Image (cartoon, rainbow, N blue to C red; front, side, top):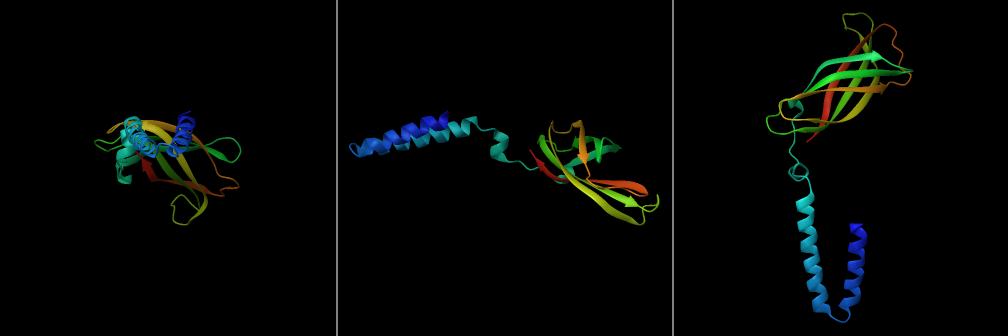
Length: 156
């Protein structure tokens, strides 16, 4: 709705500029100033500041993968935000599935990898539980399955 209103005002200013150029350009300057003020007053301060949370400040605890339907698995974990002042809004976790020849995890092959983007609100120095279904198409382990979880991106 705001864009339609701005479009109408812009067309009116163009038409007005042919007869009253000083008034039209003064109104254009005023319109730009009002638009900038409205933008900065309504935009989330975290978006403007873009405070970064270091990847090392986010921990994944008690991560468990359980078989679900078809070729998918259920990811359950707790995300811990160790930042002192910045809330966590979104995290991307890389989940890697390994097929190991034995339980010593000496000879493992990567048979599946997925990036899971999770929208979550974790206040500073707090934790939240997450659960997602992750699909690994055509990944069929032959022996022991091992998982690796890495935080690859964060957003505050």
